[in-house]
Length: 335
Image 1: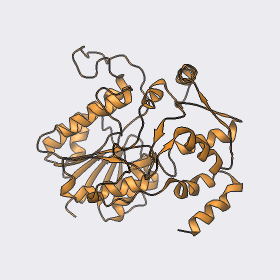
Image 2: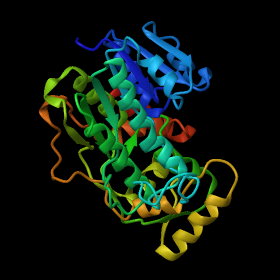
Image 3: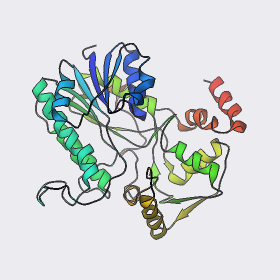
């Protein structure tokens, strides 16, 4: 393996923990910075993984973290912004002005820009970057526009062997998608959703992690951007119904007209705590999150064989309700 000393940004997140586990199983040394070390407690048992407290938003800290590394992987991303106002000091001529708010700008654009500069200063030439399927400079949502601007920072960097991944919705144990709807179904008699006909092509988190780990040393992936999807297209309604049913709480799913869906999302934005749904999320759903070419065939250099959603998701969703655990065990026994 050419790249054996890896810095993983966002390594304590849902995708990050799966990827770090995969890299460690390959015998690579991995450093995972985080603001709070307890977030990475599940990674501490891995002998080749170091979890340290650090603020990657600080340029000097980022440079220090990159010292002596062979490669860096950026998984950092957020789904919700704090508003659409430009950041203080941002002029109307800057790319982000009026395109997205301060949180998206800081996480999706500023961090990749600082990371590229730090790689140049520390002579780190290999970078893997996770963007999003549908990311576009003229995308319908601030999320997709900010993801596109961050991706451009990476792809335009000179003398950097970068690979960009554009996944559809990622599912797996601990995800914030299927698990969210399964949890809501346990408490609500009916599930109200916006954009019920939005189409998605969910990819299993282990398939994404495996593709990224394979790409790390594959020279054919240098300078490339890959759509990462599962084998099947679903509507949002299909996925919500499946999650509720697999968790043992089948519920009717009612699709809302856009006017009511945006009102509901606006109300969620005002509630304290984590945002369940934002108006920007609904704008993202106006664009299908599916591969541009169907049927989807992963690039051969990724050595990826997409797993179907139902058998994998049944395993973790079944554990959410006693009546469905046996079904999950049966699925696992057939593997």
